[in-house]
Image (cartoon, rainbow, N blue to C red; front, side):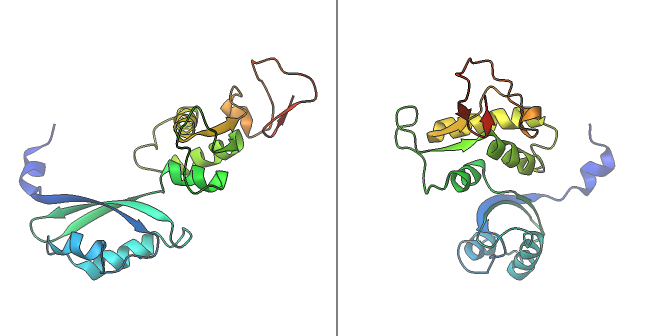
Length: 182
């Protein structure tokens, strides 16, 4: 429960703004300018701070940003890493997912790709307390809804990095599933 001091020092929130902005590409032009300008926020301060925070990413990587605008014309913002769908499309080398997921396969990715995406997403504020295994399961579910087949499903996620195959499904000797030889 909040203390009396915290309640009295809270700033009233004018709005919460959600945008998708390319990394290192925040400019006071649309879509950033009109979204922040209607709340009389300092556009140049946001652009400089956002570009400084996202300089470690490749240019034009779509970053999700949540801006909290206060009534005294100040703001705070949090930047999340790119969406799982963007990472999956890059890993699969496709522009869009399947039009009929479950029926038509758009592309394939390996469990190693899923593991790498999960390690990046684990740094997000909403995923930092989730286990790596649960993040991987969520990514596999997203891939299935996009029509992307994941090779190596059934492998223990902790052992996927070591390239060991513990697959519960029987396979013919000499066959390959993704990066894992059976």
